Length: 494
Image 1 (cartoon, helix red, strand yellow):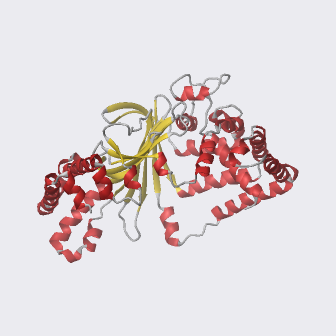
Image 2 (image 1 turned 30 degrees about the vertical axis):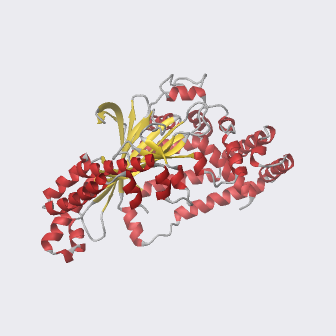
Image 3 (image 1 turned 135 degrees about the vertical axis):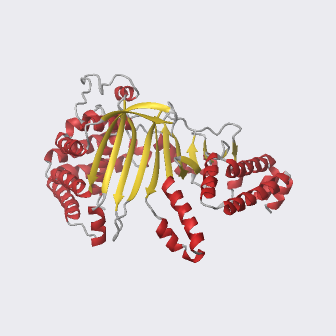
C-alpha cells in the first residue's frame, strides 16, 4: 500500500474515532451535568427521532465508565429437524430428546458482556470481557477475563466469586525489554490532544453537525423514515424500574443498501470533505513533528521531517492525484454495492429478511437498551425463525479486583518449564485454592439456580434417568475430591 494511501486511511480512522473522544464540558454533560456540549453552545434541542437517537449515541459513547451486555438467541420450532437427526435413537426416545433440545434452544442464548473504566492517572483502562451460555436470561455458564491495572484475572462469575490472577510482568516476561519500553512510552502519549485538534476543541456531536451537515440530512432522513416517534415506557431490569423512550423500526436490506449508496455517492464528489480530511491530516502531522512525539515511535528528527515532506507532497502539492485516488476509491465502493455478487439463495434470504430494531433511551439521554429481531423463512417452508439480539448499556460500571482473598496468583503455573505438580508441592495454598474452587463448581452443577431449571426441564420431558446419571457422576467426583488431602491431590496430578 502506498504511504499516502495509508496516511489517508489512518486520518479518516482518527476522525471517526474522534467522535468517541470528548472535551471536559462534554464529559460533564454525559455524566449527568449541564446538557451543553461546549461553553458557548445553546442547550441541546431534541425535536425529532433522529436528533434524540444521535444525541443519545454521542452522549453514551463519550462516557469514560461504560459497559454493555448482549444475548443472541433463536426462536422457532426445531423439533422435527432435531428428531430427524436422531432417528437412530428410536421414535419415542428421539421425540423426547427433540422436545428437550427445542425448549433449550428457544430459551437459551449466547451471552457477551464488555466493560471499561478509565481512572485518573492510570496508564491503561481497566476492562472486562465475558462470554457464556444463558438459560431463561440467566447465566448458566460464563467465563470472564479482566484487568484491574495490576493483574489480569480469570473467573467463572456465575459459578463462584473466586478466580485466578496473573501479573502483567509475567504475561510480558518473554517480550523484548526494548519493545516493552517502547510500548510504555506509547501508552504515555497524550493521544487526546490529537482528538481535540481534529475536533477543534468541539464536542463530537458539535463537530459532526458543523462539518457533516449534508450527511446528517441523509442520516436523519433514514432514522426519521424508519423509526417511529418514540413511546414513553417503564421497563424493569434487575428488579429496578427504568423510565425510557422506546423507538421502533422495521428495516429491510434494500432500504439500508440505498442509504449506504447515498452516503458514498455524496462523499465521492464532496470537495469540502476532501478539504477537511487534508486539513486534519496537516494539523495532526504538524503536532506530531512539533511536539517530538515521533521520538516515541523510534524516529529521528530527519526521518520525521522526511515523513512530513512526503505527506505534504502527496496530499497538498499533488492535490489533483489525491482527488483522483479519493474518487477512484469511492467509485470502487459504490460499484461493489450496486453490483453485489451473490447467489440467488443469498439474495432471496436478504430480500425476505425483516429486521425489527428497538432502541431505548433513558431520561438522562443515554442509550439504555436495544432489541433486534431478524425474521426469516427457510426455503420451501412457511415456518418463521427469529434470530434475536437483546442488549443493555451499563453506566458507571465496576471492574472486579484481584487483590483480595477471592483471587490467587498463578504466575508460577504459567511457566512452561515448571511441572505443575512440583509447583503445587511448593505452593500448597494454590493447590488448596484449586480444590476449593473445583468443589464450588460441582456444587453449582448440582444445586445452582440455572442448572436446577435445566434439571426441571429434563423432568418435564421424561428424562429423569439422564438427570440422575449426570448428578450421580458429579456427586461421585465431588466425594472423591473431598476425601483427598492436599498431598493426594498433588500426587494425582503427577
